[in-house]
Amino acid sequence: MSARLPEDEFLRLDNQICFALNATSRAFNGLYREVLKDLGLTYPQYLVMLVLWEFGELPVKRIGERLRLDSGTLSPLLKRLEAQGLVQRERSAEDERSVTVRPTAAGEALRVQARLVPRRIAAATGLATEEVIDLRRRLHELTLTIDAALLDGGLDDGLDSGSPNCA
Image 1 (tube, rainbow, N blue to C red):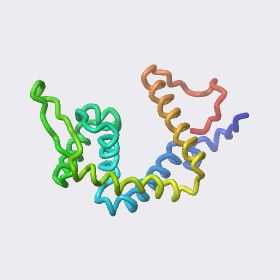
Image 2: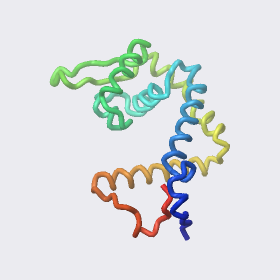
Image 3: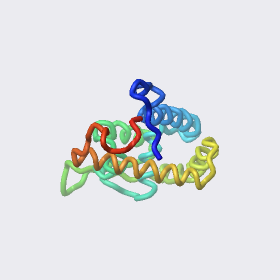
């Protein structure tokens, strides 16, 4: 059964899912800033390193796709990581437009220290492991649903959907 709000409550800030997600995101960013301080990484740099630790070597384009970042955002991140000695960038001999990135030995060594980060973050949420896994799954499903709605042009006014009029 869905809860419906009176029309005059619809535009209240506290009834907006976007605000709740944004506030949570900002809280997580602060938490990650504190936890990653010892590694000398920002949160976006940490995400890049996670992708490289998982896949080893990737073209910049694939890193951007994986992280949902455009090259204008990603390129400066990669330059800073390279300046720190954590990654190596190399232009493709076959296609000069393509740049491949891989972790250096120092970048791989940082992986050992980073293993504690997910545990510290999970502990700070106060959620049980199963709750964290379920929340992550639900957020992933929400992202896919929104992406599909944007791709299909499936945005409507929500009046006939039977869903709560709280967004």
